[in-house]
Structure formats: structure tokens, C-alpha cells
Image (cartoon, rainbow, N blue to C red; front, side, top):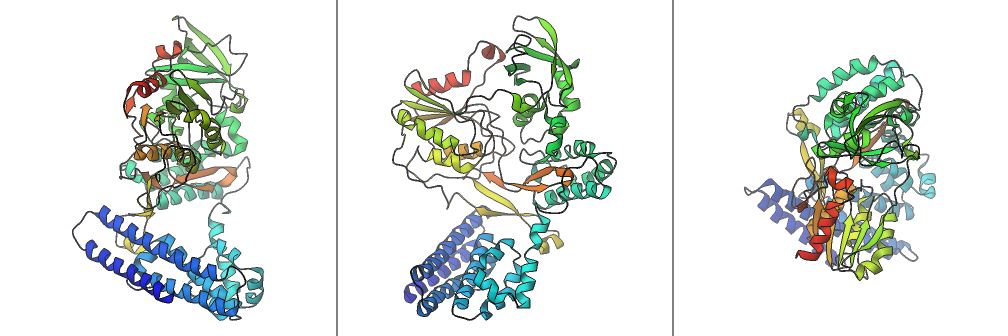
Length: 586
């Protein structure tokens, strides 16, 4: 076994030499990234093998001899991660660094089982002192804590690893709601968001003319001049939209939701240049405002002028279509609860009239049916996947699967899917193919202070890649017929992750309008007075490096309903999807 493992170590080092020689050639940087990722994957897999071999030895009833043999496996793995030729690559990859630290910790824990505490204390005093990870406290078993408790090195380490938690979501800067904030709290909240964005926001390339430091100075004056928490958040909520990203937001305290998010019980949508009422959620309004009526003005201001004056500055969005949708469908009519706004409307017959409506809580609106499934003419299955927030989406698909398997084609409607968890979408895709499913190629900002001191550019590192880590989940039943996915500007976040994989699988076609163009991993933080913020820290691409953030995913067939289509009750994108399954070859 030791000889076999030595061969593994030798192979990994040989692979590295090839990587170094190829990297010296004049080749595109993306090729070097790919080579680095391939080597990283190779190292990671071999470290996993050594660890699994060690754990297998200790699975049943470990004795001192077996523990000593397991330690040898860990030592073999560390020959790879600590080889001078590979050390720079390991140290620059958080995943490999984490595995190397785990190897050291687990090996030291085995020494403790043999009665020797010194390797663990030495580890605490050296390598672990440079890794302040709060989660490591839980790795020490009660017995280990008892045996180490009296040692000053252990005591200091436990105090040190609590530091990061004081700087994150549990920071004292985030505080409960109060009607007024101190000057220090106002400044701290602004400074926290500004500093975290400056350090971690991944889309500054989308706002190249934005001077983030100048913005900070401007907003310092503005936030300190506010008189109460409501005014403070009215100003703060203008800050995030300057970054032009749908996953970067500032939210007020829940106690102020009624002030900022109340709206009348109607839904609206922009069709070309016409804003139509698409739903009426209150029985008291049904006779006053008809679905299909056009809104011409709000409080006697034309809708675009009203939006520009009162709404646009609060809209965080990634693309023009995302921005338009958020302004005219989500935020246009929002304001303080129980306040009245005057709508000037024109009905389908061309008659103009005015109606006053009162803002109320959004949760009072009637909820639409979730995950609606139906069979269409031509034996075509249709499933509306409204969201990926929980397992309801996958459960709905599984419930419909027996009928889907018998159908001639499948239409998945993601036009109202604002996202959730990517994995729920991937599980659904696993019922459409037996092949591994490609996922987004992701990057995050990775700055080295030494480079900043030398005024070098920000470096984008690659934490994961679909080239080596596709989603694999085998299903007993696979639908192999034609698939069309309906998309639009409300298709957002995890729903776009779904499309990245679907398009890369070449499993079907997209019909509708460009998607919202925003996904990624937000970093969340609590703000003074009970508010909350998030900043996008991960930039996703198609596996072939194609960009869709800030642009949206473009359908194969672009089509959208007009105002006349809506008033006639026609769903033109759905009609086109049915036609595509019936007549097109794909």
C-alpha cells in the first residue's frame, strides 16, 4: 500500500512539472487557469484518497497499531501538499489549503489518541495560529478540550478564533431597531457597506466611471445629516443601486417595511411603452380597475416622470431589462402604508378615468397557484416552475414525471422564477439527461496585499469550474423528448443558473425575452437599527467563459406579448413554445 501511495505522489509531482513547462510558453492566460484547475483537481482527489484510506483503517475498533498506520497515510498526503514545487499552488487555493489544514489537525488528533498532546499544541502554535476559523473550535472533542484546557497556547488560540465572528454578521455594528441612531452608528453602517464592497464586490468592471471613494465622502455628509432611522435608510438605500447589480442591495429594518414596501393591491407590467394592470388582488378594486387598463399617470405625473423622480434611485439591477422590470412591476407603486395615490387610467375601449387606491401590505395579495402543471394540445406537458427556494419545485416535477414521460414534449415555464437554490434546478435537469450536467464557471476577487502595495491590478481567482466538477445525479427515469424553456426578465439568479446548465447540455431551446442577467453569491451583513445589506462576491459565466451577467441569457427564439395580446388573453411566448415542439427539429 505504501509503495502504491508513493507512486501516486510521484505521478502528481510529474503532472506539476508538465504544468510548469507548459505555463512558461506564451499561451493565453485562460489556458494557464485551466491547467492550474486540472492540477488542483488532481491534488484534491489524491488527498481525498489518502484520507479515506486512513479513515477506513479506523472504521471499526482502532488500536494503537492501526492508528500509527493511519498516521502514515496522512504523512503521505502531506508529502504532496507541502512539496516545495506545489506549495505555492496549494497556498493560493482555499480548497487545497483547507484540506492541508484538515490533514494536520486529524493527524495531530490521532497522536492525542496515542497519548501525545504535543503535536496538537505545536500545530496550534504554528499553522493554526494563522487560520482564525471559528468552526475549528467544534473540531476539538470534549476529551481533547479537557486535555488541552490548561495549556496557555490552547487558551490563546480559542480566544483568537472568535475574532472573525465579531467582524461578520455578528458584528456590533449591526444592532436592533431603534427610531434614532447615533452619529457613530450612522457612520459605521455606511463604512461597513462601503469597505466590504471595496474589498469583495466582483462587478466594478460594470461601473468603470464610478469613484467609490468619492461616493463614500458624499454619503458621509448625507447619512450624518439624517434625523432618524427612516431617513437614514432612505439615503442608504440609494447607495447599493450605484453598483448596478441585482444581488447587491441595502434593505431597511423590518419595522420600516410598511413605510417602504406597501403598495396597492394591483400588479403591473410594461408592454412596450404601455404600463398595464395585469392583476387586481382586492375584491374592492375589481369593479373600479379592470385588468388590461393602461396606467398613464401617478399623482398627475406621467409614469416615466414619476419613476424617475421617486423610484429609479432605489432600484438595484444588473441589466436594462432587469431595471425596467423592477421599476415598473415591483417598485413603482410602493410607499408608506395606508397612503392614497391617484392613478390616471385608460381602459381597453380608450376611455380615460382617475381612481384613487390605498397602499397596503403585499402579503394581503392573493397568492398565485404554485407549480401549475397541465397537458396541452398535441400531448405536450407544461409545468410552471415559479421558484427554486425549496424542494417544492423538485417535488412538483417528480409528481408530474409519470405524465411527462408519456408526452411528446415538455415546456418548463421559468418566466416568473426569481431564483432560490441552484441545486433544486440541477436536480430537475438530472431527469432530462443521463450525462453529467455542466454548471457555471465561477470567479471571485482574490487580492494579495503585496500586489496592492506594488499597485498591481486586482486578480480574479477561480474557486470552482464546471470543467471538472459537473453535477451528477443518476435517475431511474429520464425524459428524452423535446424540451422548451420559457424565459423573461423575471428569470433571475438560480433560475439563470438552471439555464446556464440547460443551454450547455444542448438539451433544448429557450423561448421568450432576455433574462435578468444577475446571479452570484451574496455576502450578507447586518446594519445599525436592524437593517441588512448584501454584496455580490461571485461572478458566474457559462462553462465556455461566455458572459451573461449584466446582459441576460438570450433566448433562441425571442418573442414577447404586446399589450393587445395581453388584453386578448393570448400568451404569445407559450404559443411559440408549442409551435417549436410541434414543428422544429432540435
